[in-house]
Image (cartoon, helix red, strand yellow):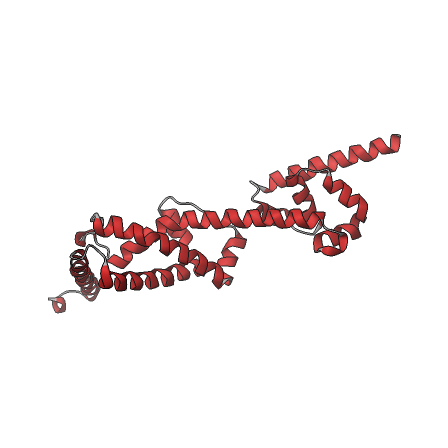
Length: 245
């Protein structure tokens, strides 16, 4: 039948045929596992293979950043920063951590909704592995947000520690001491609230306002500028008051 039709149409027909065969094989596999209520050695082997497949695909999607396009297409807009994209591209441990948590949470969801409750169907057009990756894309956004929040809490704690150490105990305190004087900087920062203290310390340390937005989870560069403006204004008024006295 394929010999008598144009090559492009024949290629498409061939792909459709292969997809049908894969889904038919998946249907037979699903029916076989259903006989044992999706438990036992056969299901365990299937789950292990599915986990390895999911881990591999997720790591690849994170490495290229493609996963954020996929989640956005499902209305999960994560808007990763440049630093977050660079970390996932560079750090294999970060990719492994996110992939592991995503797959671990997606597997029971997939078993319940796709297999036991019949969410996956032969007629649906997706193979079992493809359907599973869809389940992973619903889990990943929450895991990414959890990690983002954890990183921000760590950054806050790190900054809080750095600005209260002795001047020679950390880079931020050291650079502040060189620029403004040890005791004066420590006293000035100590009177600020935690948010302003972090913004001022990072600014003195040479971070750009865009980098400060990413590190502290600020809403915008304008918010950072506003905090710095209020601090500078208060310092100016304080100095002017000292001159009059």
